[in-house]
Every structure is written in structure tokens, then in C-alpha cells.
Image 1 (spheres, each protein chain N blue to C red):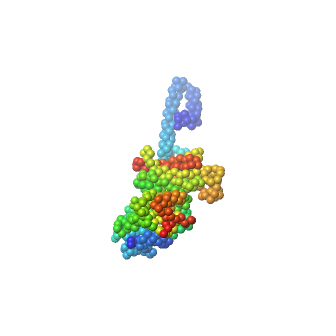
Image 2: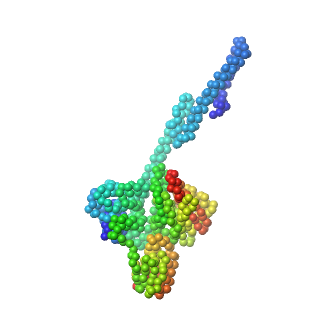
Image 3: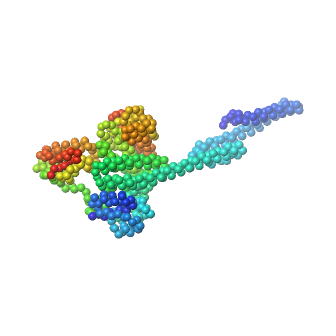
Amino acid sequence: MKLFDYMHEIKGVLLVCFSGGLFFTLVLAAFGVSAAQLILLWMCFCLILFSTLVCCWQKKRRRLSYLRDTFGVLEPKYLMAEIADAPDSALEQVYFHMLQRALKSMADQVASSQRQTREYREFLEQWVHEIKLPVTGIELLCENNKTDVTRRILAQTQRIGQDVEKVLFYARLGVAEKDYLIREISLRECVMNVLTRNKQLLIENNVSVHTENLSHKVYSDSRWVSFLLTQLISNSLKYKSARPLVLDFASRDADGYVELSVTDNGVGIRQSELPRIFDKGFVGSNGRGAGAATRMGAATRMGAATGMGAATGMGLYLCAQLCERLGIGIRAESEWKRSTSICLYFPKDQTVMTQN
Amino acid sequence: MLKILLIEDDSLIREELKTLLSNQGYQVSGVTDFRDVPRQVREASPDLILLDISLPGQDGYQVCTAVRSFSAVPILFLTGRDTAMDELQALTLGGDDYVSKPYNIPVLLARIGALLRRGAPAAAAAGTRSCPMEHRGVRLDTVTGTLTKDGKSVELTKTELKIMYLLFLHPGEIVPRADIIEYLWDNEIHTDDNTLSVNVMRLREKLRALGENDFIQTRRGMGYQCEN
């Protein structure tokens, strides 16, 4: 707070002081005090007034500075009233007391909200655990009775698996505890596992896959990387063109990173939409039929009409979020109506991984 | 025959796993009474234990610790949970490996095989035949990847070799296209329907070069067959 501002604030007091001074000057002049003595008196008066003013100003300034500093480094900010020292001025005390109660009520809300989220997430984890039992049962039944019908059933349970995984990872995104196990994984093994897990679904959709150049090993969490790859495959399936889908997995060295690319020959992504594909809830103009579907509602209607699943716009968003937490770079390239390529960049230096 | 003991409380999964593993040539028994599991383990004395972590009234980790006190039998944890903590816990408590639901079947079977090989190297070998196979005078050598007849031989690509191998395994039977494609996928050859047709066409050309004109027959809507 500048001196000028402070003086402006106490201008009433200053006005009274100077009026009083003037009054007493006149009275003293009437009592015969000489001009020189009056000037001396005025000078003393001004000196006392000014030094008192400056002291009060500095005190206020220090207090404000303290409050600002405390507020600046405090996290979360709504604990301000608990952390800052109690004020001494009566007015400030009133404000402070109100602030305390207001912030406490908000902190209670936040705690309650966090507890609700945690309970919901725990319920979801438990639910996912439970749902895996019948799904596993179905898959084992189909595996033990291989026919055309059971193969098609397996393709559908693999779709269920993909969506259940999506729910689980979305729920885990917001968690404070980090559920990672970083170790050396073989990209080839990871890709093969994902392909096997979605085998019937891919075969049913007449997909062919190339995996020749996958010799690299990287440091990451194999489960999360598997999830990423599954989501990318699911996307490629969703946005394939009329011609048979071809998926290409390749890895190469790139400048301090290992680049893993997943390329498909699907409908591609418009250049204008490319920067937004990782946004939460973004559903582009892709899919069958004419017209752009830029809101989820429209996408759902369109999805229902064409028999294709409703796009939630969450798949790539989840991937981007995960990549951020794992220290993996993600980038998309596309040629409209020709191909789409999503590249993951794994840092070569292991120490870069542990930032989270 | 190798003995596997299944400790899983979901009855459908337990029964189907039994079927799956018996079909692979293992002798399988499942625990149905979950009181005093360690005693049942001691009585059964298996070569491998498949242990579910969530069991009624106890958790799989306790069972593992109890079993480890008297046996070093390989233990493969089966579970629905798949957090990093669970995996670490499973392995540090004496488990040998860890597979989460839903089971990636080929991976599950491979891991069981690997654990059993570790325990009893000679007994566990149940792999594919690497000896040469023969049908109607045509010999398939899986090591060199060649088809030979009357002294003439042709080389096969990896894909052609696998297809031929599968057909040789079922002489005179119709092998459905879906089975062939799935077999190729299980062997990391991820082809589609068209590619299969192209490969069979190439195989037929190579067989013609050996003088076999009708070796592989197409059964419309059903698959391929090596005529008897």
C-alpha cells in the first residue's frame, strides 16, 4: 500500500488534525503567542503527526505484506484463516472471524466432496473386480467350446473388456496415490499381449497387423501402456474406412526418445480437428453419414442410427492424461481419408520417468 | 502327467479352467471346500498351484505364506485386481507369477508351461512336434521350412509353413478358415481373410511345382482340407 493511498484512507483524521491545528493556531494567536512560536509549534505538530502517520503506515504495510506472502505460498488457499496469525485491530478481527467461518464451511464441503469421490471410486474398483468374474467365465466357456458363434461372442466380450478398462483407468486418473510399477518392458511383448487380448475382435473385423519393427525396450508401466495401445486400437477400429483395416506397429530411435507408432489406414482426421482430438469430450466430424457432430448428443443420435457405439470423446483424452502422468509424449498425424498415425515417445533416460 | 491344483472360489471359472487345462494334457483338481486349504495342498501334492487372491474367509496371500512354509511348489496367482501393489505383494510373498482376469488364455497357458518347465524340465515338455510330417508322399520339414516330394523341394514362407503345418496336423479333416486365421494369430502372424486366400493360392502353386495338383482342397463355406 502506497503512502498516498494510506493518507487517502485516513484523510478524515488528517482533516480533523489540521482543522484542529488551525483552530488552536487562531486561539493561541488570540492569546498573544508570537508568529515565530506558532510556526515552531506547527513544525513540531507536523513532525509528530507525520512520524505517527509513517509508523502506522509501515505497520499496516507489514501486516499486508505478511498476509500476501502467506497467501501466496499457501496451498490450498482455503486454509488461509487457519494459517494466518490472528489480527490485533478490532475491525480486522471481525473480518478475520467471518473469513474463518466462511473458509471452514467451504473446507468442510471440499472434504465431503472428496470423500464422496473416493467412495465412488472404491465402489467402481470393486464393481470392476466383480464384473471380471462373469466375463472371465464367458471367455473360458467360449475358449473351451470353439465354434463360429463362440468366436463372435468372444469378440464382444473383448469389447466389453476394453470399455471396462476405460472406466477403471478414468476412475484412477484422479487418485493421489500413484499406481505405477516402472520397469523395463519389451514393446514387442506389450503389443503382442494387446493383440492377443483383442484377437477375436480384430479377426472378426478382418484386420491385418504388421509388427516387424518392434525391437525396442523402454522403461514404463506395462499395464498402462497396454491400456494406451488398446484404446488406440479401439479408435482405429471405430474409425476405419470401407477398405479392410491395416494396423502398423513400429518402433524407432528418435532423438533421446523411443518412438512407438500405431498407424492405420482409416478415415483419418481433418487437419482442422487434429489439434483438438485429445480434448475431453471432443467428438469430431468422423463416423458414418454426413454432417458434423460437435456435441455429444448429436454423436449419440448418429451412433444409434448407424449401429456404431456412441463416441464419448473420452478415449484419446484418457490417453493424453495417462501419457502426461507417465512422462510419455503423444502426437497425432493424419491424412484425411487415408491414414492416421499416433506416436508415443518414451524417454530413453530412466530418470526422466520419475517426475511424478 | 503333471498335476495342477486349482484354488478358485468362482465355480464356473473353476470348472472351465479345469476343462481348459485337462485339454492341454494336465491332471487338474480343484479345491471346493475352503477351510484348511494348506492341508488340502499337502494332501494333493501338486506340481503347480493356481491360486486366486480373493477367497472366502481368507485371502490368497495367507494361503501362499502357509503353503510356502512346507513346500516350494510353483504358485501362479490368479486375480481380478490388477494394481501394482497387488502384483508386488503377490511376488514378494512367495508367488512365482501373477495373471489377472480376464485371462489372456495363450499367455496363461504359456506361463503355466514356463513354471512347470522350471520345476520339472523333462516332464513338462508339451510343445509342437518338430519332427518332419508326411502326407501322401509329401514331407513337411518344420525345421527347414520346406516341402519335399520325390527329391524335389520348395521353400515355404513363415506363414505358408504354419498353414501347411496345421493342415498336416489334421489329415483328411476340414480345417475351418477361422481356425487357421486364429492359429496364425496365436503365432504372431496377424493376417486377414484375404491374405489367407493369397497364401493358400501360393501354397498350391508350390505344391503344383512338386507335382501335387490337388493337395489342398477348398470346402466352400467350411475351410480347407488335405485330401486323404
